[in-house]
Image (tube, rainbow, N blue to C red; front, top):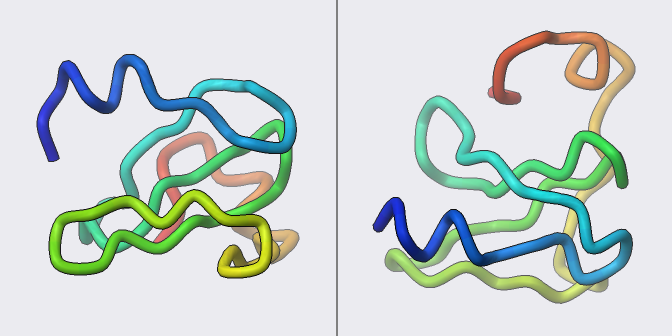
Length: 65
């Protein structure tokens, strides 16, 4: 994902910054505890499409997955 795009995208719920998962398939909001999918290189920043992070993912200091 483009670094500039990642720098300007925020969680639609909390407005906190997002990080790209290690495998590049999700944008992670640690503050919101949500993971938003990236489909065909396009972030899907809809709360209804997000999944809740597991307890382990929330504690992980790096990106989820």
